[in-house]
Amino acid sequence: MCSFFLCSYNEELLWYSGTINFGFKSKEDVNMASEKKDIILTGDRPTGPLHLGHYVGSLENRIILQEKYKQYVMLADLQALTDNAGNPAKVTNNVLQVALDYLAVGIDPQKTTCFIQSMIPQLGEITMYYLNLVTVSRLERNPTVKSEIKERGFEKSIPAGFLTYPVSQAADITFVKATLVPVGEDQKPMVEQTNEIVRAFNRTYNTDVLVEAKAIIPKVSRLSGIDGKDKMSKSLGNAIYLSDSPDDISKKVMSMYTDPDHIRVEDPGKIEGNAVFTYLDVFDSDKKKVEELKNHYKKGGLGDVKVKRYLIDVLESFLVPIRKRREEFAKDPAQVMDILFKGTKETEIVAQQTLSEIKEAMGINYKK
Image 1: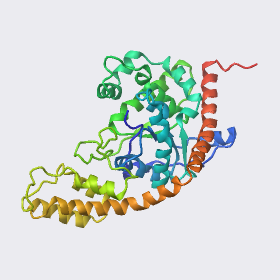
Image 2 (image 1 turned 120 degrees about the vertical axis):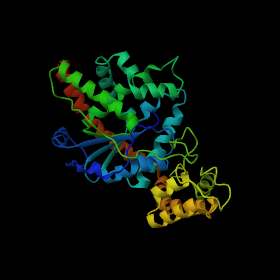
Image 3 (image 1 turned 45 degrees about the horizontal axis):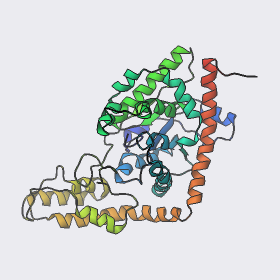
Image 4 (image 1 turned 180 degrees about the vertical axis):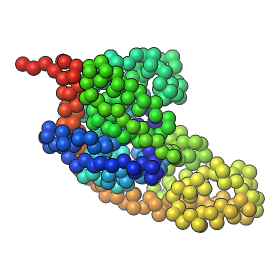
């Protein structure tokens, strides 16, 4: 699963109502924050720094949503290990890098609770209870799992942790009692399976402890890679990172896929599938200028190099403030980790509350 949850901003997301105050100091605070308020869970697998695709697909939207809802953002290191078990350092070393990207783009720890998945021990116990409510064949039929198994070549040897990924994700969603889960279209089956587990649990134990979540599907949830492929991805090596230097950006943009038939400047060029214009559509606020460039390019007389240089300026204008904030936060990595530890500690209070309710419903909450 390349990214834990994907989402991009669109106005249809904002019809929901309800907010929850930041910070849980006691059981009473947890109860107050659970009074039928919408709660968002989203996050990323920390397998590398974040790129422009992450910004378009999720980060931009999180900045907006944190003003309206109680939002949890999870660094899903346990889930990242399902296909990186042999290289845990790749995951642990990138927790800080992803956190730096969060802070650099404007995710505010006073409004959004960021936490590290592996530091919430209750998740393992909740996952175990849920595993008894789902069959292996149902997990194998999950479209997202099937696609990811094929992509990683796991057909002949599927790690059990990878196969049970949807159950782990169900624990993540339900332990904070998330009601809204921003996801890309390809991740929708994961939320559907979460809701199946919720219904099975509530039916089996005659309770309403767990709540179903609504998948929020954006109109656009991904940005094409610089090679023109459908998806920008770390693994494909076709990404522009939020932390890239000006030289990196310049080199990557100059290598961008355009129109292979646009050989001479005077030749008419195609806009469709042209990565340079795709990026201009997303990142250039001067829409009139972009339309003028498109018309000129389609008519002929506008070279790829000139358009690419213009895109470099547009991306630099966008990334300079992000890069500067990231550099400032990176001067004190201990402080950044303290933000994660604080958010994790607060989140664990929520996890323990939910686990207690689950065990009570199951009748296994032993007491002396």
